[in-house]
Image (cartoon, rainbow, N blue to C red):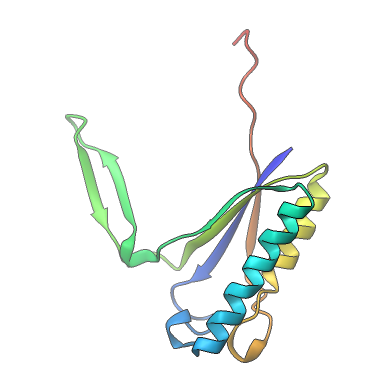
Length: 133
């Protein structure tokens, strides 16, 4: 079954300092960790996809207006406390394995090399509805 793992960062910087305050070495260690995670998932046949995402200042919320035309709200969003920083789609045999992967990703190094222990949401990717529907 496929699972989407969502990496959340706090815009308020309450969990850990914003990445813009990290040293180049700390950023390289964090990115290196993520690359190792991806390589391991690939070698184990569990990798489907994964990407880092732009921050809130680059994000847009889009809704359809009354006439169907897009109505765009640009970031940063004052009401946002956390934002989606990246995701993985993995294909695992069990939900427990998806949780194991998420827990490992949560330990990505941050300032001073300490584990961030950031929240990683785990969502099953739903399959298509039955053909008779």
